[in-house]
Image: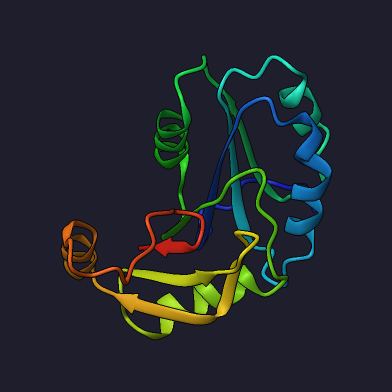
Amino acid sequence: MKGMMNNMVELSVVVPVYNSFSLSHQFFSSLLLQTYLEFELIIVDDGSTDGTYENIEFQREHFKNFKLVKTSHKGVSHARNVGLRKAIGKYVMFIDFDDTFNPLFFEIMLNSIKNNDCEMVECMVEKNNAPKIENTITISNLEAIKLFYSLEEERILGTVYNKIFL
């Protein structure tokens, strides 16, 4: 699947990683099972010292649109922001290296945001922290901001790995 970078990528998937060598097989297996494969994968290594970066390098051949960025260790938020600046997709998802997904995860989330004319879609999370795609909610950016800062509403989970953003 390796090829030229496609400037018409619809979905960018940003993944921060730090010293996660032992998780790479599980993570990449989950990605390769996705039914929607035309995504841009951006992995930001946040200064790993355990061979994570080198291990991820071996996965390049399995993905058409793959960016691997190495930064000094500045934390997960910095790594996500670096990945976001590299993203070219219309839609962005942030996932973590220890996440596993239903094979329909990207496809359903992408279709939900496109078909509902909204700016964010969230799905529920199962007990093992895996996104549960059967139940999604769609909201505008303004509504999302209001809900994030509302003490009365608990409708939006304070995580990023179960969301897609415009």
